[in-house]
Amino acid sequence: MSKFTKLLFGAAALAALVSIGMPAGAQNEPYQHVPLPKELPKGVSVEDAQRLQGLIDDYKRQDPLTVTKIGGDNVYFAKGGVGGNDANVGFVVGKTGVIFIDSKNSAASEKDVLAEIAKITPKPVDTAIILHSDHELGVTGLPAGITIIAQENTKKEMEDSKTNDAVPSNYFPTKTIAKDETMTIDGVKVRLLHWAPAHTSGDLAAFFPAQKVVFVGDVIVTDFGLTMTQIHGPGDVPDLHGSVAGWIVAVKGMLALNADTYVSGHGDLFTKRDVRTKLAFIQDKWDKMKAMVAQAKSLDDIRAALGEPPPKPNAQGKLPPPNTTELIYNELTNKE
Image (cartoon, rainbow, N blue to C red; front, side, top):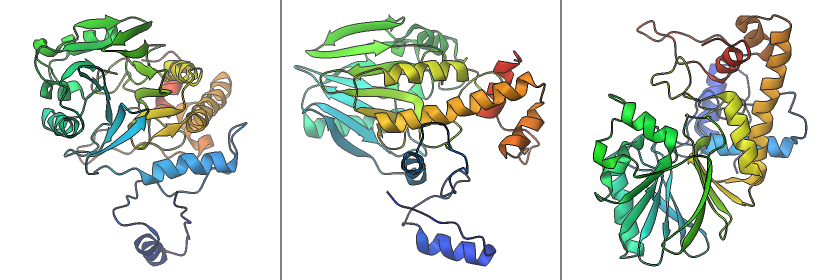
């Protein structure tokens, strides 16, 4: 894990540091390569925070497709692809077929993963598990007529979608999960769990207990800072009915699983320790904001207290979608 130090000696010195100190291809988003907060959440050590910040620093919007074996002899993690910010997916080789987990950003990118699968096994992909109703268009790159499993809210979001990632009806889920269901697919035991609306209304975790691997979709990502995450909630386009309160519930549920490896939706793999650290940062923000809301503090007051600048409009004068801070405030004050 790389360590970076920001030296505030003027623009020229900063530019020199970036060009010399960063590895080739590294990004420098506002949330990357930044100092740790002066005050860390209770129970989070400096080392914990550095590990998580390191995962965030290593994130790249554009990465070549790579496939890595991560569990036993049959569970794989596919990262990167032809599209920017292409989603992580996985696959598990069963007795006669392959289980594809989640969805890439496009059919073309999904087919690239199929080509990688063909290098590993001649077995066909016959089942897909979609983990949430965001960037699900990739599923159309899979063979027609396969079994498609999703949480029931994800199916509803897919059926309702008319513009964003609109999927043809022949690729709608053929089986839905409500809360918690364990099944054996082609000799592979998997537990599918939904705790609450989080990133979207229908987030699903795919837990493979024999391998101690859980695919968690975009509930856990590395393309946001320590105290932020992506929630497609009210005010976002599309509004996929996500919730920060639900995110906290879902992550607590994930941590209760007997898992060692957590496959994020974007970025590198997480350990249980990394997931626990991320939860601590979001829970700490929630708790601090709850206390300030109880004191009738405004959103602007809270942003200032947290050291966060107000959002800036883009060139067309439009504000960005609500971030984690604004969503927490809206949930605590019951504002839509």
